[in-house]
Length: 260
Image 1 (tube, rainbow, N blue to C red):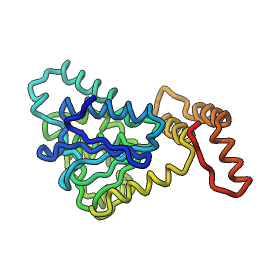
Image 2 (image 1 turned 180 degrees about the vertical axis):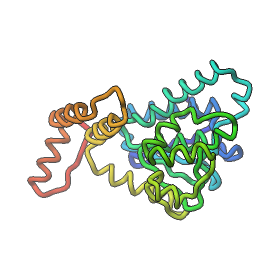
Image 3 (image 1 turned 90 degrees about the vertical axis):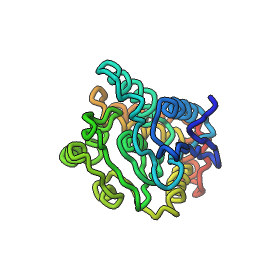
């Protein structure tokens, strides 16, 4: 797929994905969502990709929300289909991606933008960023997993407060409640996200994928997370990376993992 709304570049095993609609504060329209679905699918399948860094163009917005003009005249059936497709193809795909996805939140992360960030595995925010789910001020609720992921991350009481008031919160407050892993100055944002991914790159790729799958299962009501962890643990023993990791430990050297 040729991308018109996002930029994608692979450097040193990190796939840099930038939502490139700065004039629209990087709002999510249908085309952008389709491109995000494609790039995440590609990242999931390519061995040379060891992690994804997701950000927005400019310094004003990560993603300021969905493109409201596209669905302002929808009926209930169309709205449900919009949410279902978006969750399946983009937001759930990011959450289930076997490669770690780090969101570098460079400004406003509102509505679908915050939902996009919450689907990522790790979130780093610039100190001027503002986060919120303003859907109730439009007569809606979050439809891309926002009610579920926000509750999982910060707890029921805070989640209902944020959603019901539709208020934005500062990056500092978001870090305090666990919505952001780190807050740094704008000038250090990408470097901080890179430093996390560079540390992860030193570890065994198949083990990272197994860990992501196992952690996600803790929030899947239809899954037995302990059983999934046990099985993934066992499968790790069949990998070349396990053999390399244990050899390196016994030989007192750094391991060189191949993702096999």
